[in-house]
Image (cartoon, rainbow, N blue to C red; front, side, top):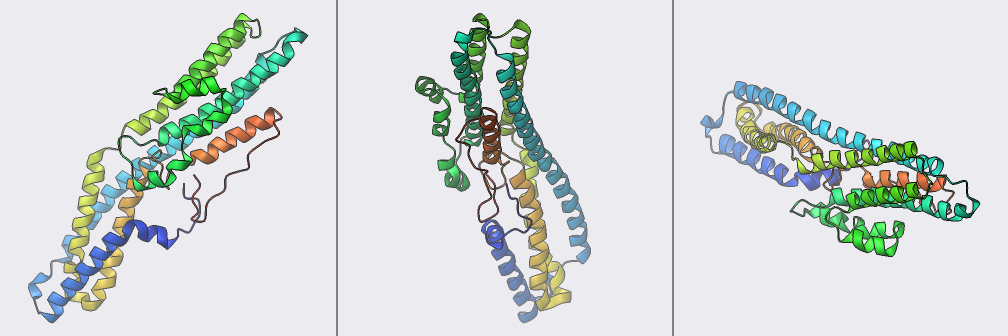
Amino acid sequence: MLVTRNLKWKLILFYTWRNLLYYILLAIAVFLLHDYYQIVNLSIPFSTITALSAAIAIFLGFKNNNAYDRWWEARKIWGTLVNYSRVWEREVRILITSSNPDDQKELTAFRRKLVFRHIGFVNALRVYLRKPNGFMNKESELFEEENQYFEVKEYLDPKEYFTFYHKINPPNYLIDQQGDDLKSAYEKGWIAEFHLVRLEETLIEFNNIQGMCERIKNTPFIRQYSYFSRVFVFIHASLIPFAFVGDLHLAMIPISVAISFVFLALDLIGERTEDPFENRLEDVSMSALSTTIERDLKESLNESLIPGKIKPNDDGVLM
């Protein structure tokens, strides 16, 4: 997620240079044909661009609003995960108890196992969501080393990790394991029946959170909007030089490029916001949120090794 107020131009140009090059070359070609070769019938009525600009602005506004809604929903879902993770640690610590002094050491290890497995679930969910759906973009390749299931290894015992790693849906497997352990604790008398129900309700919330994330991940934004917005922006940019060349002449080149860039930027904002789990710069900052959860839960357990807070990189990107 980009967190700086001012974007670096190297990032902007990385995604727009091909389009900008087309806009510049087209504007120069139209100017030369009109002013040097005296092909005066190149001009088109300015009202044509005015009407087209208004229609595209409305279209892009609708697309961007819906794309942002998807991104914001994803961020709220992960905010809910942060909250319920803290609830889970507190419930495990308070609701799982035993009056037998001989059980205390085993009980402490059991609580720690449940909390650490949940940290593993959070990191597994992050990796699971960032895995590509049948394709690998360049940005996914760039961050792929930072999103592997081996990061979950330290939170699970070796046998469980081996089974986890070979599952089709690893995060869901960890939730199932949590349920099995709660059942075992209930049979040992460590959990009262109504406490078991409460803990199970929290696990259900984790299932719901994963399901909501999968819904966004596996349901693409309506492709008609993405496709036609690109087509409309291209047509608009291609017509602008013809509308301005008759009145502005040489000044038409920078003006037409600037106007085309504005519509291009609006289109790209929506396109890159619509999918918040694609391992790109505009992702929801799941790595930072996973670390926040880990820090909070380990602190509550009085663990000594607590990770530091993730900071944005030099480009202002918080992953």
